[in-house]
Image (cartoon, rainbow over all chains, first blue to last red; front, side):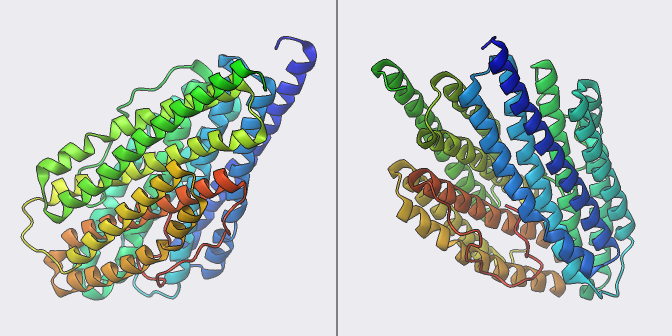
Length: 237
Length: 237
């Protein structure tokens, strides 16, 4: 374990894992941001292009998982080093889920292209998208810097996204009640809002993983939760 | 690797992992089935009891992940044996997600208790719940038996659940359009329907993992997908 040769090979493995996570993170962040742009502008072309990125993210997750496990089998790292590798597996799983959610939003943007009715909730959705994308960016930076304090900071702010989601839900319900012709469109947007909130939950999961990698400890189980119990309740991140 | 002592210790590790997965599987199956019963009967007590099981499932997932990784570090298994362990990690992640989805349905059941308006879609939701629970049970049996053919069979039938989801969505949209007072209730049920469909997607993921464990190969990327592109479109499993 401690001989020079093994240690160097192990460091190289870890560096390669870090690079793959960085690539996945960049892709997931762009997919999320593009999917929300596609939705807000009802941009069919951008929606299709964004959804098409998802298989790359799925493949990267599998590569990371396999590389991580081969590293463990080959190098037999100590407990403290195992945290890095377990962390890589967990973060790649969260990033893959963010990609799925972005794909879902992008597909709905394609479906909705040409829709003439634009509810007030669109403003809230745009804001939610900005906050979720920022949280994801910040937590990936915290991972790159191994910064537990920055990670905890993102984790604490997830509450903001829950509150925004509740507000968008209320706006969308009002929009649907105004006119039954709004219901189908409104339903798509309800799911988009939920997807953005769940993308934020994954940023929060990543924050927990960064905290675990750096400190070996866990953030409290009960994270500060915003939001009332309404139709948007029950995030299943 | 090949000496008797290591092999026996490794077998014991694998058996322990198998038992933990079986426990998780049993819990996830019961949570899903109970959450749907709570929803159909708008049973507040059962809803609360079901949601309360979720932390146990989360803890089991962490235990399985850690045990799996320690096994790899300690025993340095060959590639073929690694599949068993990678499989355990993947299946526990899917079961944890099923628990999240069931908790979400259970919480909505609590919210909706006392609701006097029962749409026709409730019949479809009950049917979806039965199908998803059956798929989960069958795929866990396929895992216990290491039966790739049975796993593939579940995987092929996920299409049925997508079709049922579409039909429930249409019923729910009609219900909401009938009377604006149905919209909030209908929205909760839309999310429940989506959650059940996603639980089925996780059963499908588990089927893919069982196939991979047994054969070393992967099922085709494009699994048979039912369902039209409607408001329920875009499963994000």
